[in-house]
Image (cartoon, rainbow, N blue to C red; front, side, top):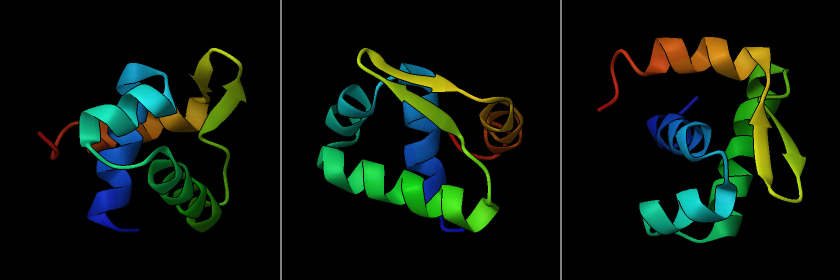
Length: 73
């Protein structure tokens, strides 16, 4: 698990949209998607359910966000 993955995760979690998060982070949508996918693989859980309007956080994402928000600005 890398700090970059957690930063990207938290931005997607807050914005509920990978495209909007990537614009905010000033990186490509592919970069954000890839890091989220890697994080999901490392944790062995699905963090977001993708849909046409963006993403919906799973219970695992809610738990991770609670932990991450404590140490990431």
